[in-house]
Structure formats: C-alpha cells, structure tokens
Length: 141
Image 1 (cartoon, helix red, strand yellow):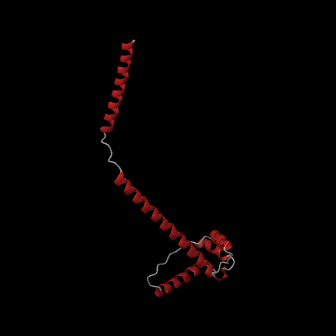
Image 2 (cartoon, one colour):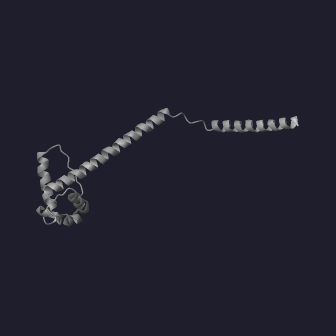
Image 3 (cartoon, rainbow, N blue to C red):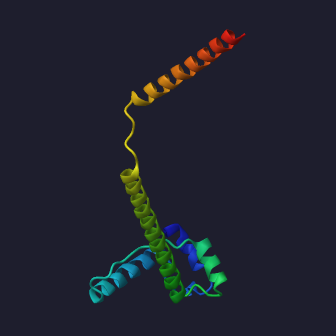
C-alpha cells in the first residue's frame, strides 16, 4: 500500500527500491506486462506487504529487505493464503458430506400429533394406575 512504502524503504537492504511509490508502481506494471508476454497462462496475484510483519519476518530469517527477500516473502504470503483457502474448501466439503449423511440416515420427523397422543396416553395410563392403586389400598384396609 502507498502509505506503507516509505516504511519498507527504511528497512536495511531496501535501497534498490525506487524513491517513491508511484515510481515503484510504474516499474511493477511494466515488468508485469513483460512477464505476461513471456509467461502466457500464468496467473498474477497481488499480496500486501505490511512493514511491521515484513520486518519481523526479515529478523526471524536473518535477511535484509533485498529484492530477493521481498519476492520470497510475497511468495510465502501467497502460499499461506492458498493453503488457508484449500483448508477452508476442504472443511466445507467435509461439512457438506456430514450433512448429506445425516440427511440420509435421519429418521423422518414424527407427525405433529403423534408425539402428543403418545404423551397423553402415557399420562392417562399413569393416572389410572395411581387411582387403581389407591382404590386397592382402601379396599384392603
């Protein structure tokens, strides 16, 4: 992003970068056109390099902000994003498979009246048993 460009230029090894973001953008577009002519059929992706995360990555890998390091970092960002998209698609596929299995194996829902009738009959039978039990106790006394 334009606002991050000066921060990236301040990193050690980034002195090969053009002085302004606008110049960098013109150079990038020109190189992309050239590369596209040579590499028909290849896709191009934009990734955002955040200066703070890039600096931390450089420090962790003991690198300077050279052109090679910037390309390598951008490739890592792309690969991480690609892997995350693949994982999300795989999880979505598994969720669909589980939902399909559940739909196939699930018993049909009961008719709206059937469960009420069963509960009502059970309550009536329970009440009748208690009533007959009380009557039987009184009869033996």
